[in-house]
Image (cartoon, rainbow over all chains, first blue to last red; front, side):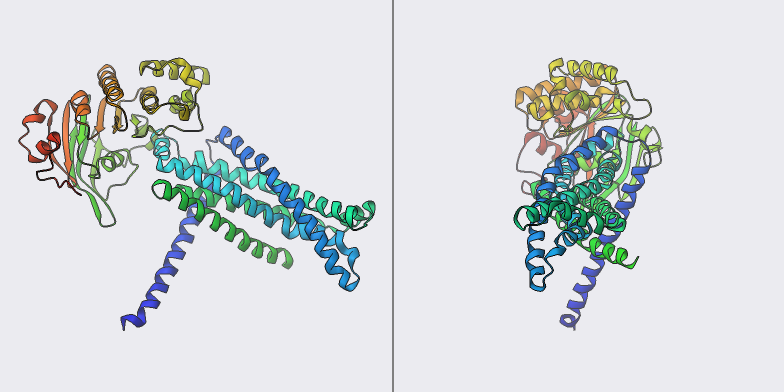
Length: 261
Length: 248
């Protein structure tokens, strides 16, 4: 009998574990967001987070976007040629970058670069008792470490997404006008005329959501790190995995929401 | 007076504290001794509220520590952590002045920096150290900076967690002497956890032996060698023979 019920038991334990994780992360996110709104505010930590998450991510975001925009233009041109639709390259590059690839790729780059760095930094602070030291110095770690990073990510990742969108479109433009014989003025005209306000709004909303998720996962797994170097490594790995999966899941949900509007 | 009554704490099946009773009178220096992994740090963290006990009561001046206003309670404490726990991203002076720069009554940065340098001098460090980052300091210097941070806000109670671990005997002696001087000159209540018997003899007014989750013996440091307790005797002689298992 027990061999028959064992898989059910394992499934139940896994389900409970999963639900417990979702509950803990949700409570953590609510607590973090409540600290974003309540004083005291740590302007210095917020400023540092803005620089680390925003300014220092620009090179990787720019490189990712420019290569993706160029490759996208080439794919659309090659694919479109099969049914004489090469002329749609500017429109598809623009809508593809702004609605989908810009936010998702920037989100994943932020997960790789920022989530890992936040998780490793906070986890190291935890294993070296710096978090305990903060508490004994009457400073709430959620307020001092988590709130500034989450707020900075919520504000600056949409800006990164906008920059990524522009650079991606420029990548497509450079390739199309340089190698595929497109007229520069006509390319820009087609791009600008085709994009709608909702495309840009959906891109920025996605950026905001992905930035929040990336920072929250880094902070959550950092604050709940195990002991020693292995604990820091695990926290970093889980944080990046969780952030990447949640960003893709949120992208699916948000795309559905924007399509239904 | 810090008073602990029947304090228990378990982590899953590991019953670390099984009913600790201990009194630490005001203005005295209590040293908790015991082997590695016997729950000394957990006991200290229970008092500070960093770990929540499963059962028992901890009072500070007859007030239950779980019911006091948290910021006011913590403002009475200073703490030197085992690895100093300095904030890597801040220069030394901001580490020392951290509490002074926070909260409603925060000091202007210039005054906080002056206080930090004064405290650094008190622990034998030059003012040039103030602008370095913790990673640029030796282990002994980091411990001194941690000590300066613990005393910066002139607390009533200071906790020292393994203050000499990882230091050479000479630096350990310097830190022990500093702790003794500071405790005497500031008139604070001190609680130190250590398994370094040199520290015990240098720092302690009273000693308590923690083993198997309970206090096995407590008394004045002067009576340590004639305690009559087999656990204490084995611990201070460092013998493998006795009631404390050598391999745990």
